[in-house]
Image (cartoon, rainbow, N blue to C red; front, side, top):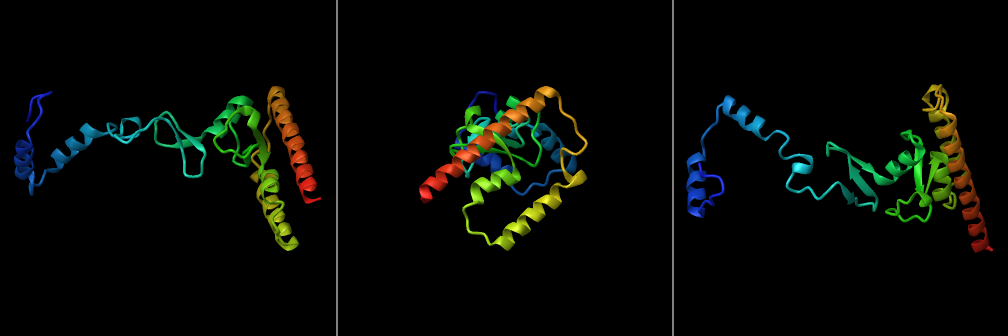
Length: 185
């Protein structure tokens, strides 16, 4: 073993590696090594850690949770903080200007899956049969107890925030539709 703070020579490192090569460690030795390194090389302690925020391959800002083991899209966290509650699986946060790393609350609106798909896919040429099939699939998934809102009650404050967000999203949707109509004509 070398003293703490003393650099080892390359020759010394090579000799130590040769001495350990081919040796089998007992199960007890392996367990001790494992316990001594647990948690030291994960999350923010990992040598590749670059901070809690990063941009993923799709252009969204991701934030690691406190344990550093899973990540959450920043735009969802911003909307959750604004509403004062966690978002459900069927709620999507849409970037109004379609810039994925612009997570200002003024640029975000809360939409249902159907509303979000209307924004992005309405002008694609789906056949009428495919549209009906898609609408029926989403209705089936969200009906009754499968709907995350089924049997739940929100405070008046939360209801008002949701109403405000929905009003904004509907206004923006009509503006987008009007712009598309003007472009066509």
